[in-house]
Image (cartoon, rainbow, N blue to C red; front, top):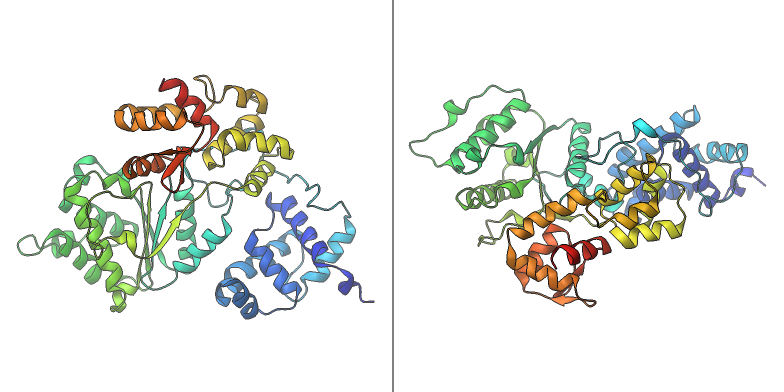
Length: 451
C-alpha cells in the first residue's frame, strides 16, 4: 500500500504541530488547521472556503501561502499544497513521538532577559501574541472590502491595539496605505475643540502619508463648518493624492467621549464617511478601524452613530486552550490542575494571564506564591487593582454597586448604567440583567478595600 495513504490526518497534524512548535514557538492556528485538513482531503481552496465561510482568495493568499512558506523554512525544502503530505510523513517518521494531544512538546522559546514584559501592544513578530482565530480572520477579511468599518471594543489591556496593528499590517501586505492614530496622545486642549481636533487629525494623517500640509489651502473657515472642511480635505486632497486605499486606524477613541462638544460631530462625520463609500468611488478607498474600551453614552441619532454600522468586534477573554498555548510560549510545563488554578483566580484576561506567566517564567515567584498574594497590596496585580479602585473612588455610587456584587454569593441585579460601567471596566461578568465578579481576584480585592 502507498505509504502516503497510510499517513493519517491525525499523524499529519501531529507532524505539522511539532514542526511549528519547534520552529516558531506556536502551534497551528484554527484556520491553518482547517486549510491543512482540507488540503489533506484533496479539496481546492474554493471547496475549503465554502465549508468554513471564508473567501477562497483569503485562504489561498493569506493562510495557505504562509502555511506552506513556514513549513518550507522549517523543513529546508519547498513545500506546496501538492507535496506537503509526503514531506510531513518523512518528518514524522524521522522523529516518532507520543501523541501531541496527550503530551505536547514544549516549544523552543525565549527565556530570561528575552521574555517580554506584558505592557503595551504585542509586536507583530512576537510569539506572545495569541491569535483569536475567528476574530483575526474576520478583521483581515473585512479590511480589504471597499469602505469597510471595523469597531473593536473591549476593556483595557485585552488586546485591542495588538489586533489593530495586525489589521493594519494586512493592509500593508495589500499595498494599501495604513495610518495609525492614538487619540490618547493628543493634548486635552485639542480634544476639547472640534476644529483643532479635526485639523490635528488631518495633519497627522497627511504626515504619515508623506503629503504636504495643505490645511490652510483647503480649510474654509468663512463658510464651511469643521466637519465639512475635514471631509473636503480627505476627499479632494488626501484620498485623491494616493493611488491605493487608505486604512485609518483610530485607537483609544473613548478618549474623546467626555467632550460632548466634539464627540457628536466627530462620530457623525465618521458615520457619514462610511455611508459615502456606498455610492462614491473615492470614499470606497477609505477603510476605518476604531478601537475603544467603552461606548459613548450620549444621545446619538441612530443614523449618525458609527456604533451601529460596520463590523462589531468584541474581544473576549482567552479560553483554556489559548491559556495553555500561552503557557507553552513561556516555556511553562504546567499541568491541567495548575492551569485551572490560575484560571479560577484571574480568569482569562490576557494581561493578567501574561503577567502571571512572565513573573513565574523569570523565576521571580512560584505559581502558588503568586496566587496566595494575588489580591494583596504586595501582589503582582497591585497597580492594576489600584487603578480600578481610583476610578471607583471617583464614583461612590458605582463603588457601592460593586460592593453589593463582590459580597454576594449569587449574581446581583443592578441598573443598566451600573452594569454598563462596571462591565466596561472589565471587572464584572454579565448574566442577562445580573452581574458577578469577573474573577476571584476582583472579588477578594474589592471585598477587602470596599469594606
